[in-house]
Amino acid sequence: MLVSPNTVTFSVELPEGTLDPAYLDEGGKVSVLANAVSGSMDIVTPAEVAVLERVRAGDAAVDRELVAGLLERGYVCTDAVEEEARYRAIVDGYFQAIQEAPFQFMFIPSFVCNLACPYCFEGELTTRSPRMDEEMIEAAFDTIPEIQDRHQNSGPPYITLFGGEPLLDTAYQRGAVEQILRGSYDRGYPVTAITNGVALDAYVPMLLKYGCEEVQVSLDGTPRTHDTRRVFRNGKPTFELIERSIDVAAEAGIRVLIRVLVDEDSVDDMPRFAEFAQTKGWLDHPKIRLFNGFTKATTFLYVTPDHPEEKRKRMVRGDVKAGLQEAFWSMVKQNPLVDRMLQPDLARIRSAVLEGDRLRPNLQGCSAGTSVVAFDPNGKIYGCPETVGRPQHACGTFYPEFSYAAGYRDPWRHRHVDTVPMCRDCNVKLFCGGGGCPIKAWAANGGDFNTCYCPKVSSITTRVETQLAYLLPMALRRQQEHANRPEGEEGTWEQMTRVGSFPWMS
Image 1 (spheres, rainbow, N blue to C red):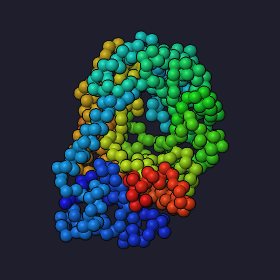
Image 2: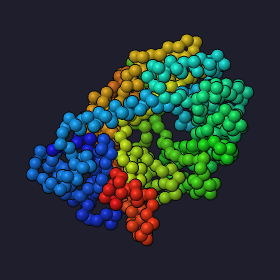
Image 3: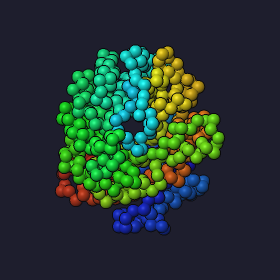
Image 4: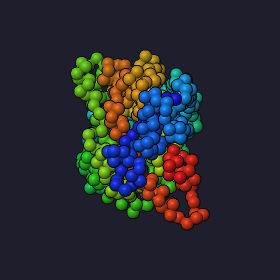
């Protein structure tokens, strides 16, 4: 008998009275076991934690009943070889699925953008730019089968319009976008667009003509917050224009994903924005979904592996400013409408806790290396949309001739939790994807993708524990509400939790 190497113990502080005191340890916290290979996640008693630790220490004289429960849920096992085989099946199955999954090809007609957002990762690229002409656009389409072959990918390609701002309302941009849309339509490739939304309404007829079903736009809060950030280059506001575009696109039948960018300047505005979105009818609109992102440090884009180590370490910094996620969760706890609007899931455990779904392993922190390619207006190919326009990150060219830098791309494409030595023996690797951002690892460590650019294990653990502290009281309240229902009024949620990752809730 041994503890599965994939078992993690999280220690969570819950509000007083949330659970029976029998579940609390000496510090007043609750222990949650999780195993992303077995798919299990459970609140356990201190007695069960003690048994787990005794098994870990090799003590055979343990409570058989408690061990049986831990064994059934996959937290302990009887055979290390079989446990490794189960883990390997998860990893191999995931990468087999990646080879058959849709592959995203991003077309950038130009880097020019009509806005001047202070946090834009493309920065100076958006003020002037070359343009994709007709010949370049056709060349990009021609390389798609070759790139998929290099990636051993048989999935259906889909096209994303990207920028700069792809939907600029200019004669050149409308012509280039229509050529890309037509080329996609003729080849049977689905199309999406990532746009600032300012002129989206003017493009809706064209998008519908060529079967575009989904667009992503950004709003950073209510007008008083948004219009201090996402403004035209002359400082004029954009909120009302984007609001109108969202309504026009959604009513025309196009799905609209609204990305709400959160930072220290906008986090306190989220409750007011949620009220606005509810009044607009966006929260219940079948064609609209809102989600959040965080502003990030992007100095890593300017680093090359030949920079001195001190400079590399200094410029490759963490994504989110210290304290921002804590402030975000504090705000969401006090504002259920914000939770309803964004349904935040930073640790990817929401459905396991609230819906009884199995816990899903996160084998790769970013899909860019395996299933994303961007074509820029310089004729270069990039594997990450954040790196476009930075030549040191290009992995080939599509025009005037095709080339693909296998020495750069292949180690990135095959990077996962097992190729990064520092990750192999880390039992929280299936919660972070293994190794952190590949581009940051490559830049910080002198050009080696199979290295780690990782927040400390303690910070990954804290991220999961923070979300558990938020979700568990919500789950327990739901449990109590459903327990108080009259007999015979059981719904889908009860059925799911009976067989899901939290059997203690049944």
